[in-house]
Amino acid sequence: MLAVEYAEYGDSSVLGVATMPEPHAGPGQVRIAVYAAGVNPVDWKLRSGELKDLMPQKLPAIPGKEAAGVVDEVGEGVDAVAVGDEVFGLGTATSAQFAVLDHFAPKPASLDWSQAGGLALVAETAARALEILDPSPGQTLLIDGAAGGVGSAATQFAVADGIAVIGTAGESNHPYLRSLGAEPTTYGPGLPERVAALAPNGVDAALDTVGKGSLPDLVAITGSPDKVVTIADLSAAEHGVRITTKASAFDALAKAAGLADEGKFDVRIAAEFTLADVAKAHEISQGGHAMGKIILRLTGV
Image (cartoon, rainbow, N blue to C red; front, top):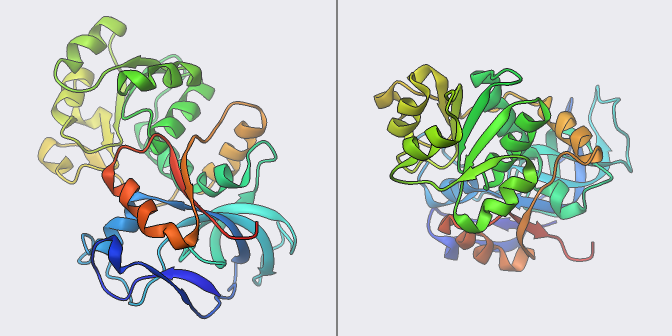
C-alpha cells in the first residue's frame, strides 16, 4: 500500500510517500480503506522528535491517529460493524491507503468524508477534558481556543448538554463561535476583565486547548486550579492545574456522530491535501493558525 512515512526525526522534509506493508485487523479492531485522514499537532510533534522521550517511534513510521473510510477487514470479536460499512475512528498509522482502527463508530450521514476523517481525535479529546471538569447544565464554561478543533468540539458538546460557553478566539472567528452557541471574546491580556463582564455570576470551569500561557488567568477567573484542565500546557503542574493526554473517552465518537446527524455538531475543514502534499499539511498544522481541521484525502475517492 502507499503510505506517508518518515525514516528519521526532523522537519517536514523527512516525510515522503512509500510502499509499505499492509496492516491487518486484530481482535476488536477493523481495517478500513482510508478515504480521509486527519493531520493533527501530535503528528508533527512525533515526527519532529519533540515527544521522542515520552513516545518514541519505531522508524520508519507512518503518522496519523484518525481516519474515516470503508471497512474491508473485521477482527475477531467485532460484531457492531461489517465489511462494507462506512466508519470513522482512532488508530495508528492512518496516513495510508489502509489503516487499522482500535475505536470506531458509524460515519455520520450528515458529514462528508473529510469531516468524518477529522472528527474522532477532537471528539475524544474534548469529551475527555469535559469529563474531568464535569460542568453541569446551567453552569458556565470558559474555553481558551474555542475556534480550534478540540475547542470547537468541546463547545458543541457543552452547548448540547445545556452548559453556557464563553470562548476565546481572534475576532475573525467570533461569528463562527456564535454559530456554535458560544459567547466569544478575544484572548490575551485583560481576559479576566472581559470574562467578568460576560459572566457577572462567575465561571464554573475552564478548558485550555492551546497551551499559550493562559493558565494563571484561567485559575484567577475560576477561583481554583481544580476548576481548570489543559490539553496542551506542559507547565500545568506549576499552576496546580490538571493536564490530560491519555485517550479514554471513546464513547465520544458515537455521541459526536449522533449530534452531527441531529444538526448539533459540525467539523470545520481548513484545508485538504493529497498524500503527495503531506509535508505542506504538516507545515500548516505546525504553524498553529489553521481555522479548522487539516485533512489528507486519498487519490481516487
